Length: 136
Image (cartoon, rainbow, N blue to C red; front, side, top):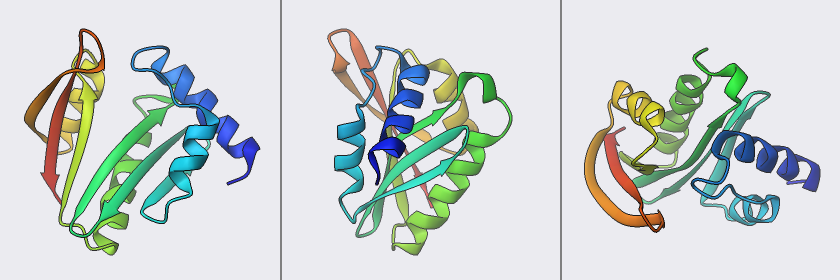
């Protein structure tokens, strides 16, 4: 991945998440995408980074520009994530979402994800993560 692309993704991640949870840097995104296990799905207004290992996939992050939300971009990226994960042999997917991110939780529930657990103080002190999963 070229540094300009990583910078664009990092800037979008910052716009989407602010400081909670901490946005990813361009270097972190480049590092993640250097692994053949991880993959990027991207468009002009959003991106998703996923990972598929054996029969499991993980949705690592999903970011859609604030001005482009509620236009189906996240659902399209997630459909691509399901397909790519299945192509790589996964039959189940997992994710973590901040407990205070009601909009993301609503999206995931509408997409068929179910809460499977809770990680206290996962993102920061007082910021829990809800664990979710779904069959692919």
